[in-house]
Length: 389
Image (cartoon, rainbow, N blue to C red; front, side):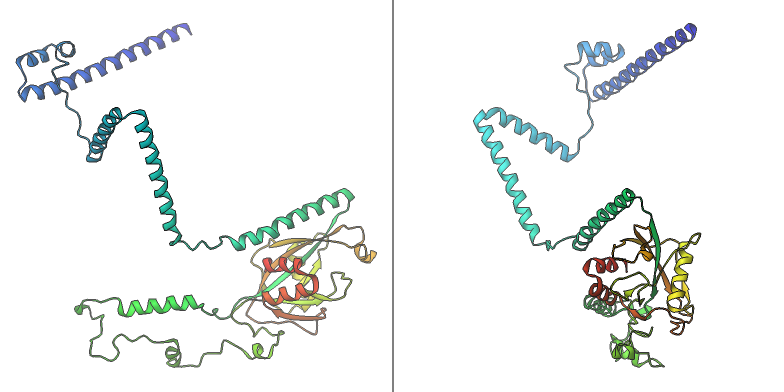
């Protein structure tokens, strides 16, 4: 070990000496090249004589008389250097009180420039409230999570388990595209105008119409395009929309519809109410299998459904009221309701009223579901369905 340490120290010492020698040689060569350039430009004979004896004589005899060339600075750097020199000269000439006044003036000008910029920005920004919907959601979500955590602690303190219920959101996707907003229609009109009048191509390409032709720069409207079709398009508003029939899928084609039922399977004291198809999960039954059973038990098995995921979309908690029958509550603290989203398959199938166990059903939009829930249960539960759907 001692031998290795000695070898390592010797190697490190040699490395340091080699680095120092190399740096010294590079510096000497740089100085010699500089002096050669100076000598070739008309230096004295003493300068040429000093070159032969190395940099030692240069530092001792010619340091004061020899000018070493430096790299050229950029124009901005030269200007800044000149300004700094002028400012330093002026600062030396000013008294303490004058320098203090100058600094105070500079601070005042900087503040006025900043205020002017802020006033100018007011005309460029609308200052409309930001994150309104996000703030509104968080105000509800944070309180909901605090309430759920409180229920978890209460159930653990009483030593009672939770019953698992599975609810299903049967969704029918939009059939036609939604109506175009006014601002979007204005944008489409402007784009059509620019595509028609805003571009000109060389004549040899043949892309432009001749000026004397009647079809030159013609923008076809939607009505003209529909009139030129070889068939008659189906109306976007159906008879069910006009009559208010909510038990058919041929309504509200521009938005999503959700299957809702009126049932008392949740043990309500007030009797049947509007809700989603649901059921209690059995032992050794998966949540997805329970969701399929909930739909078939409520409205029959004629519906063709497709489930995009095996995982539930949302979960909610319901505490059992002491007024509920003992046969329904048993020894459970409440229910954890897991919500699945499944989609209606357009290949066919509908609610089988003959095999339906629910009291009533309807295909409702999101707004219609929220309105019915709010009417029966209040705004708090309605807001949960509003965000979930």
